[in-house]
Amino acid sequence: MTGAIRDLVKYIDEYRDHRIAHALAAEIRGRASRKWVLMEICGGQTHTIMRYGLDELLGDNIELVHGPGCPVCVTPLETIDKAIELASLSDVTLVSYGDMLRVPGSHSDLFQAKAKGGDVRVAYTPLEALKIARAHPERRVVFLAIGFETTAPANAMAAWQARHEGLRNFSMLVSQVLVPPAIRALMSSPANRVQGFIAPGHVCTVMGCDEYEALARDFHVPFVVTGFEPVDLLQAVLLLVKQLEAGSAQLENQYARSVQAHGNPVAREIMQQVFAVADQKWRGLGMIPSSGLRLRDEYADYDAVKIFGLADITVEEPAECVSAQVLQGLKKPTDCSAFGSRCTPENPLGAPMVSSEGACAAYYRYRRHTADN
Amino acid sequence: MCLAVPGKVLDSDETSGVREGRVQFAGIVRRVRLDFVPEAQVGDYVMVHVGFAISRVDAEEAERTLALLSEMGALAGELGLAEPEAEADTLEPAPADGSKADRGDDRRD
Image (cartoon, rainbow over all chains, first blue to last red; front, side, top):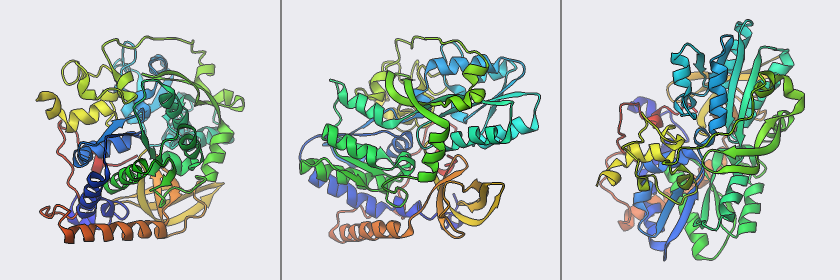
C-alpha cells in the first residue's frame, strides 16, 4: 500500500500502532506470573498473530494455540467430494469461495474438476452465484455455501432471494458451522489445555455475546470478544491474563466498535428464516451435535443434496495428517512430521495447510524457520 | 474467511426491498448490500463481509478504546517500555514465504 492510500484506512491503521502494541506486550509479560494457554477460534485472528509475530512478543508464559476457526479447514471431506461430483455434471455451474478450490477431497479437488472441464467458478459473494443463475437459465447453478455464523446471513440471503424471485436453477450445497458447540466439545475433552478464549469478533458481530457468556460460566474460563488487528489481539490477551491472574472467568467485549451485546438482529432473523440448527461433521473433529446449519424444509427446492439426490457418503481422513490435534490446540503445525515436506500449500495433506487462514499454512508462510532449525 | 473490512458509506438506495450502497475502502469503491444495517447512514463506517455490511462501526466506542490505548502507548514510550527504534508508526508484518500477494493488504473478505 502506498502512503497516500494508507491515510484513508480508518479503523485499521490505528490498531496497528507499534507503540501501543509494544506497550500492551510489555504489560502482558509483566503480569503473567505463570504459564497460560489461550486459544483463538478464528482463522483471521490466527493469520494476524502469525503475520505480525504477536506470539513472539508475549514472553514464555503465554502460549497461543489455534482452534478450529477456519471454515475451509473444517468443511468435511464428504462435502468436497459432493461438490466435485456436482462439478462433473455437464449442466452444472459450481460457484464457490476461492479458498475451497484447492482443498483436497478424498481423491481430488475442485481445481482438478475444473481442469477436467467442470464449470467451477470463484465468487467473492453469494450474490455472484445468483447473478450467474439469472444470466444462464440453461445452467443449474450450485453455490457451495460454507462458513461460520459471520457468513451465514449472507448465504441465507442468497437462498431467500432465489426463492423470493422464483429462481429455479439455483441451489446450495451447505456446510455451515457454529462456533459455540465446537468450544463446548473442546472444553469437554479430557485432553483440553485451553484456559482462556479469544472469541471471534465477526461471529459475535452477528450472534452477540450471550452464548459466550454461557460458556464462560459453564466452564469457568474467561472469554474476550476480539477484533482482528494486532492491537485488538494484544489487548484481548492482556484482558485474559488479568482475568486469569485474578481467578476470574467473565465475558468481556474488546471489539465493542463492531459487536453489540445481542449481535445483529436483522442478520440473525434472515439466518433463522432460512437455516435450522443441525448436527454437523467437522473435518478433523468428527460429528458435533447441533454444531451446524441446514436449509429449512421450506427451502428443500434450493437444497442441492435433495435436488441432485446426492448419496450420504463417509470418507476416512489421511492417517498421516495431524490436523485433528492441531485444530484442538493439542499440537502445533510444526510438530507434524509431514509439515513443510510432504505437506505444503502446493501439495496439502490436510485443509489447515490450504487456506491462508489455516494454522498450518500460516506457520508455513511466516514461521518455517522454526521447523527448519 | 470471517474477515470484514471497514468502509465508508458514500450513498444508499433501496429498490424492491434490497438496500444497497456504494462503500469506499482504502483505494476502491464497491457496491455493498446494506440490508443488515438499517441504522447505517451516509458517512458512517460499516464492516463488510462477502458483499454485506454486518455492522455499523460505533465511532464513540472506537474512540474510547483508542484514547485508552493511546494513553498507554504514550506512557510506555515515556517509561521506555515500548521499543522506540521502529521507524514506521504501524507494525510491520513479517515477510511471507511464497509468491502469493500478502493477504493482509488484500482483505477482500
